Structures are given as C-alpha cells and as structure tokens.
Length: 156
Image (cartoon, rainbow, N blue to C red; front, side, top):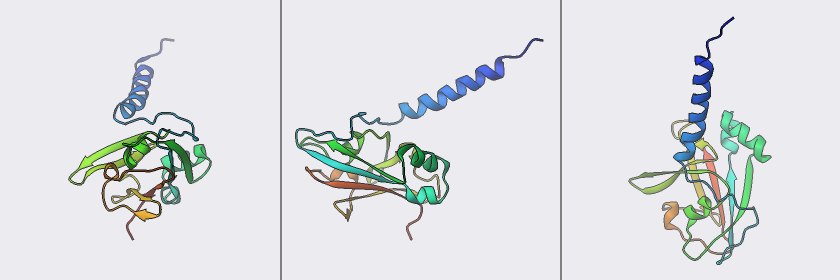
C-alpha cells in the first residue's frame, strides 16, 4: 500500500515555521543564570502571569507549569547604560518588543503576547513598587532594583 507523504511533509514544515518565525521576530534573552551580576550590579526581574492563568490561557497555563508557578523571577546583571527594557532583554526570558506612538513596549514575554486573552490584555510593569509613567526604555536601572512585569487582562 502506497501512502501519500505530502501531508506529513507539510505538517513538519508548518511546525518548523511556527518555531522559527517567532524566534526571528523576538529579542532573545541571554540565557544567563538566575544569579548573574554585572559591572553595575544586578536587578531582580519578576514575571507575574496570574491573570492569564486564571483566564485559562493555554500558553500561560503551560508556562506556569514549566516555571513552577504563576510568578517567577531572575537576578539579572546590569551595566551603567541599562534600562528596564534592556534588563528584561538580558534575562533568560524570550521577549518580543513592539513600537508605537509612545515608544517601545513589551509585547510578549515567554510567548504570552498582548491582546491574546482579551482585547486590552498586555504587559505592565512596576519598578520598586511604583507604576511606570513612561516606556521601559526610558527608565534607567540601578543595583538592587526590583522590576515586576505583570500580565493584565483588563484595566478595571
């Protein structure tokens, strides 16, 4: 019996494209350890995906399983020129950056993208407990800072 291998080949090609294209569109983390210290010290990056997990988003649920919970963190080495955005990009997380009228923004972290769970869902952040009023590339970081990126599903 002769089988048609075209569907199998197309499936492999599609799966490969789904893995390669997102990586080409993102800025990958440095893959560093969670205890890295740079020339200017280190910051703590915390990622909170609780709202997306509670909304039963498949990506968030899988990510929480992989990371061991709805929140996870990294200690990231910094230098004098780093800002919130570069600190996040230097973490082991895979980060996608968008750009708009307000400048650069975090569009996705570890595959959890803005606008997926709801139309207004996306990433917000605090630095040392204070909500940012400007984009992440405009806020310099210093040794000991704690930056929390939180995925929100609504603004209520």
